Image 1: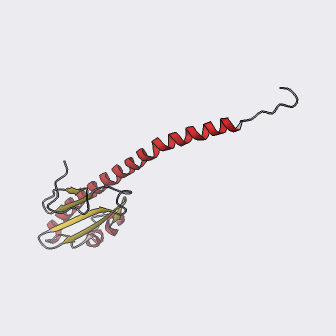
Image 2: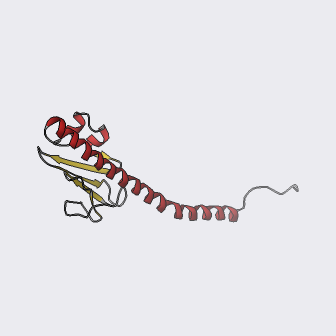
Length: 142
């Protein structure tokens, strides 16, 4: 190197690096969001399956289904996260009685934490809705 020469990046080189990073981010961020939504929805469906199983256990032991998530948590059937009604970006609301129960699971922030709402009842069939709260009339998941 000669005496007046300096090493380093030129402004053009830095701009090219920033542009490449921006392109990579533009491709990766939507995929990251889609992966997070899929993981949250999978967790919600799994939690509903757990609720079906523990409600049957609760009925066998106590003669009635759990009245709500707090009752199932107090009896030691579900963990604190599910017992609180908030888990993996979904809000769970369970209503039970002696001979029936149902539970809705909806994204806490629709479009961000999940795209679909889910529903399960005594039948054990998990149903979904892509446009709001799922109910007994919604189609079943496969």
